[in-house]
Image (cartoon, rainbow, N blue to C red):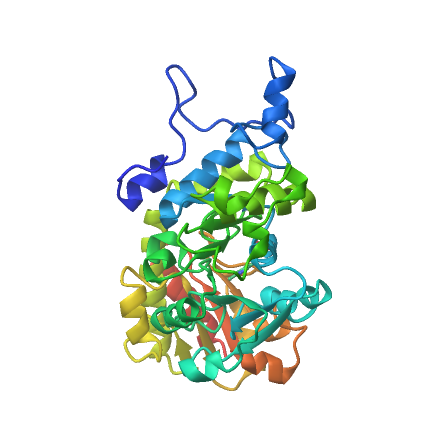
Length: 425
Ligand SMILES: *Cc1c(COP(=O)(O)O)cnc(C)c1O
């Protein structure tokens, strides 16, 4: 589907080419079911011999348009949309690492992912080992087990804001013949395309910048089509699937075996597909992705610079700041901008930080990031409160950390709001 367009054009137009007289805008196909002329057509769909839709738990034309656009934006071969980012990460892992398997994950992940990896995946028979993203290749490889089946990391960790060393992690993954799964939620495909840096699978919480307006929870998994599933470690890809009369994914779906298997096994059986309405809204969000990401990044850098010189602020974390520990990697992997999230600490500590949050007027306290409105959150008492103090520290969440998701309002208004709140203490 994807044409050799540039990313801005793909954001606006990819994924849906209306036929003569068809609606210009992707229609919301609010139908669970589809009608056929004869029984054979349905049998062929069930056997995966013919493309088409049979039931909206597995595929739907509106969701498909969104999936096609996401695949084009990331430069992958196929995408599968899910009901949330949590689902996207869960099924991306289970698809290549079933019960009995083990995953290596770069520490500093989103709090929801940490819980998923430490507790819920374990209940499903999958063990996860966290490695320090700054560890050497040898230290990381020392954690590999015979049953390791994937390496997982975030491009820009939430909220630690570490920028992944793609070169190191992709080299380790390819040496070990393991897929590198990257959660690319924070940069969005406009600021970083992990397949260009050696990733094999990309996931997103589309709830964040993809939707961009805080209307729809959703997730998406994109297949890079660049991993050899026949290397002996992934029998589910190379051996017959009895639920489809012995079909073999790497033989029968050569172009996108990962995405195909993900949809026809995991989405089919768990029923965690995206709804047509959410796909419509997420797709609408994508139409302005390039404009929003540019402005989010510009505004975040301006606010970071302002906070950095404010006398009431003890520290600021934003990879776009020249003194930031992550700046060099940010220049390499996020040359167009470092996205809209920054963190800072108020002099005094958590209590003073809370006062500042309460005094903000334009910036609201919201358990969310990455929409057009500026918002703030205190991870230690909110998103990461299920972790103990040591775990919070390990996740890059000191007690005084305030996370700001900088919106696309006028930057002078945003800065004035933080200035008055800080000066109130
Ligand atoms: C929010 C988020 C998720 C979880 O996504 P939901 O859509 O809330 O389920 C996963 N990864 C990252 C990096 C996130 O920010």
